[in-house]
View 1: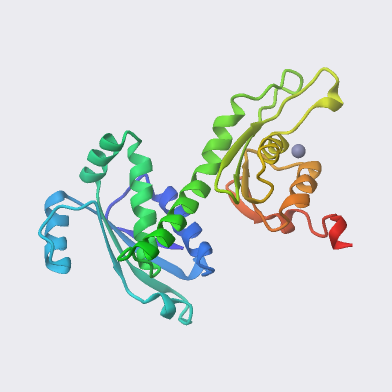
View 2 (view 1 turned 60 degrees about the horizontal axis):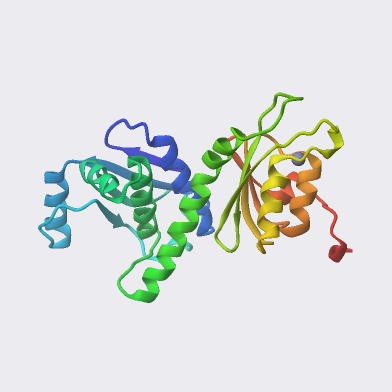
Length: 257
Ligand SMILES: [Zn+2]
């Protein structure tokens, strides 16, 4: 994934992650995709909105896709420039205050929305809007998992190892469960962060997982525990993403035998 910015930004790493998650969601190779990202003032976005969209109003984000959805999968050049994202940060600040969440959350949501436009999605009618919204929600959830895992590590009960681990799990039902490691004076009674999160989810009826983020590498027992429920889930650790099958090749499942 390549992002070309019109100015330096501290959001670069987060936007890169979002763009990669969106590309993967569409089964496109993130390595081949590039996007131009511009941060502009209210006046500039108003002008662009007027000139290109015939709408003489300030807006939060504008997307200029280069291709139609069906074209994207057929392209075979080494680098595909899928289009331009234009964001107005003054508008982001206003909306973040209005919705009562962080500027980071607002800008990442708008960026996700815009990238899906570049990937050929639209919200002209209710059905399309629903599809696009579900995609955005999934990406925002995946994006937030590592941060939630880190947050959850603060609750770790680890007086023996003094080692704090956190995990965050996204289930197929769209819910997020977090967990931390919980140790015990009887050492064998200790449970890892990943299993804490999974046990919480399973006990509430969510047995299928999309992804789990953990602040360290998952141990062998946790890999096997995940494998029982979702062998194809994504595992995020150490700033990288793996499929569970990569972390546990030939895992054990009774129904596979
Ligand atoms: Zn473990």
